[in-house]
Length: 131
Image 1 (cartoon, rainbow, N blue to C red):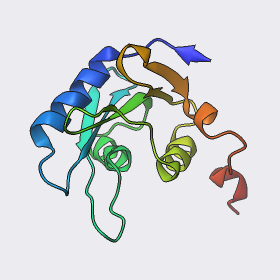
Image 2: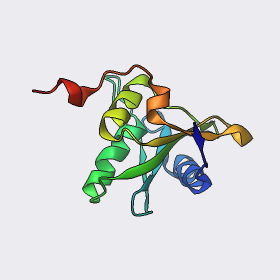
Image 3: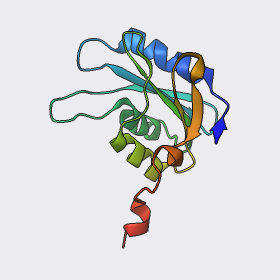
């Protein structure tokens, strides 16, 4: 099932990617719509040990700002790479934190918003396996 695309989120992430991503350490930006309507942004922190993706940095940034409800998220690459879908690790973490989250995927005029659970079918549910 697809949902309306939040173009303001794509623009916010693209702006951060264009203005804040410099060099090899920061190459991706993410933006998310909080439950209260605010837009939260973040960039990745690349490191050879596997630093966090922009989507994961965004989760910490949102929590630091008192935001614990996210509706929609998108990641955009620097150098005008456009919308980039979340990696497998991010899909799992986003699904665990926000199972109703919408994720913007696709590119150009073919972007669409889908549920995170649609991007990770037959997923392991972390909460189901906690004592």
